[in-house]
Length: 166
Image (cartoon, rainbow, N blue to C red; front, side, top):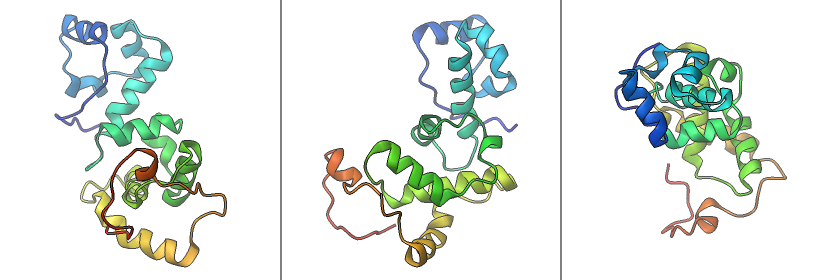
């Protein structure tokens, strides 16, 4: 597993103190299995799994903490679990769970993470999947039960244009 120096984790002060006590840098979290993190951080099994997953997902080029948290929100805790998944279906599942539709580039990120889980290709970033997503959605559209409200309406963002500029 490649270490990435700029991994960000939403650690509590107690968890940070435990890492310092054991002289473990955040960049080295993935050197430990989730059950080892559980002991080192004095954390629950679920919390240790979450921390490991958040770190592992951020090893993928152009994936940051926010998208890593989205994957955990959907119930994924490893890249292995994302093998053979479908980026469009993950997006549909994510939107349904959120209750609103997301910026189209989020689907590009889902496509990236699935690609990476299957190929380990570090040369791709999320924007390499934009054309693929546009073609797919032009041909297949979105599910009939897709939420009606957009992320920018729900989250209070102002949007200058209604067109997919991604």
